[in-house]
Length: 178
Image 1 (cartoon, rainbow, N blue to C red):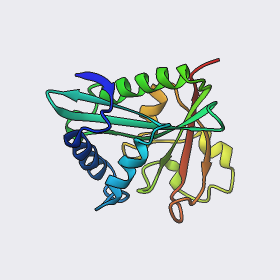
Image 2 (cartoon, rainbow, N blue to C red):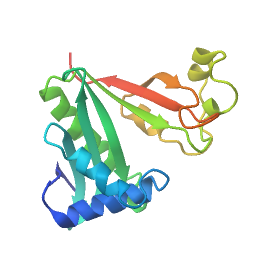
Image 3 (tube, rainbow, N blue to C red):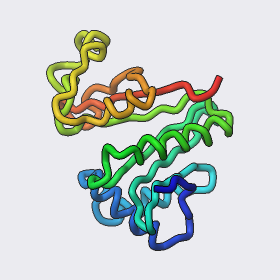
């Protein structure tokens, strides 16, 4: 497996990246939406990296500068289901962190939606006892927040009902440079 900058003009990898988004996020990137998202990820001021093996895209990560350049939003991170748990997500994420830090980033952040009731945050009203519920979060169904915690991210907040009733967006961040 090789981690490298995503080749912005390689049609084969562009198509694989679109397919990867459709595989990982079918509810969000059906049809042309995957192509539009990949095009956004590859705009000039953004970063995009991939895990590749023998011409096959295993994983993809993108980020865009926010707040000037001091905070960057990680979006998206996708790994093909057949290769999850093998380190490609962590590897592309680590490369992204180094490159963001080199560009003046202090904080890397992301939102990880709980659209399918996969965490205890989807149980009940998040406007009540918000911080206790964040502190007591439980993973009910392989939600990726635990993957991000293993990479050093921590939950810094939630946006209740962002994706509909009982479907919060979980905000996570980590310091990448001092």
